[in-house]
Image (cartoon, rainbow, N blue to C red; front, side):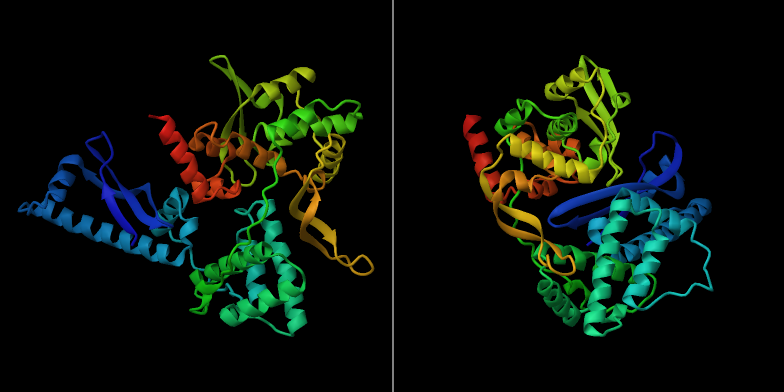
Length: 422
């Protein structure tokens, strides 16, 4: 169960209490703090915490005010907690919720809340347009187009309250008939549930079956480039200028662990020297996190090659095409299992799907391979907590899932470390 408690965390004699939200999610304990507007003295709070029965009228009245204030704020925060997705609750959520408690928005008596799923979908994107990144907005738009096709196929006008088990099963069958992978369907259902939960906060009726909007993940191959393969790519000769440029970006991505939306923005101005080492500071586009990346010798070598500058930025599409060609020339051609974007309807309307099969490895190389290569190659070589701070993963669990490490893998690695520690 979540709990909201209060603590005096200031060195001053008079200060506002810190509100502490504590809860457990997926077996992990979380605690976040933010400042309330309950201002007390240090001595009063100590007496209050000790349960002293105040006989002084002023202190007795102040005690009643503090109790009422903290109770009302606690009830408000815990009520909002029940409405929110637990995985989305963090320090910023708590700060914003407490701010809304003290400064509630003016009610809009003319606001019309849509009750249809697609109508609310547009409403949701509009009111959150300044919070969602371009990448997130595009994901919502892709799922919306899929829902539009589903409604047309089934001759339905789906309302928020219709999102329940029957919808889930029908939608999954429709997506499967359109050759979408299970993981793609899982992501679509997560976005639908996210929109419906937001509608619930706005007072829209939702089905009690909404929480059942889930589907198991499908285990997929994790494609990455090993250090040996990276060395083959580095030693490749006779590349044209544009392939050489793409090759250098590929190597840089594999030694910095960032998404293409981030590493294509690298400039020499982001570099800094400290205690003889070079670091690169960047704010990630997708998450908004500020990460500090150690600049490894492999990256320094490429900077020296280019007079201290990073390679020329190129579009995602060209980059994906050219690094495939680079890897093909480097003979990264072992047959492995993976999903390859394939047009399933070459004689009609284009139907691109990621088809699972055995392919030469270079064909499966995409812009994302650098980030996964970095995380996979350096896992176990540096502390996982350091690794996730560089990649920007929120938790070690997320990082391990990203590189395909199971509890069995980590248990075996822990055994080896324990044996070596003797």
